[in-house]
Image (cartoon, rainbow, N blue to C red; front, side, top):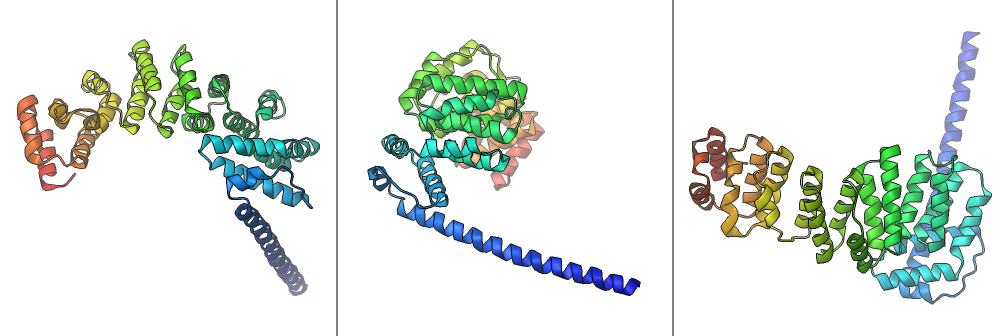
Length: 360
């Protein structure tokens, strides 16, 4: 009896395995067909100019329509030229892509399908979509579902057109920081998308008219997002003003230093004023980027880092010296001139010896 039972179990297992393999093969083939169609559409519609010439497009199947929408959304996301972005958005509006997908979004109650349609709406970056995103963030059914509010915030970022939109995004992210504890990195990503979606004059206008009541993780995320757009003097002046308004805020100073370093801006007064700060975090950052800010003749003021108690400060400074190809002889002379006491310190002597040998 037990042998027959074993045979039955074995047959069922074999059957299940075969069916699983068949279904896997079927899904693989379907996915490849879908990817091939999507790729074909992408290749056909790749030139932005060609897309924007089309005033009307008819689709035989919903699948073709969705593939086209996804392809245009991806092209828009990869287009940095503002004139081309505007043309693409006008094309999307002209052929009524947004309302068609919005209808699909509202007509289904299946969560995964709604998320898929929502992702397509987000990628189209349309002005009319903002109300939908704010509704999602306020809706009791969706406001606590991470996938929905993440896409909604991304939608707000991508559909930004003016300083009011960025201000609104800031307050949304500030609220999410307080209520959902979203990470600074995620907020930075949203600000980056918003800054890339608008003309740089909008960024200047926003920073010129915005002044935070206090510095939060959201504020720092917004500042870090500036690393991904070109250096703009008016914005950097505003950041320096914020530093004056909040002189004791460590993370604000660090974020400003990081942005200026990314932009290769020579605001060396920040290093002059803070290179010997009591705060370890500030010295860690200054030891890493300080040489990039300072004129070469002022390099010597940083040599005290060689005898700093913090190992990360010492290591950062040595790596920075190496990156700038400062010779052992040059740095030794600078130490004698500015910080001769470091030569009596065992840690600095050990660091110098390692640097002399090319071992960091």
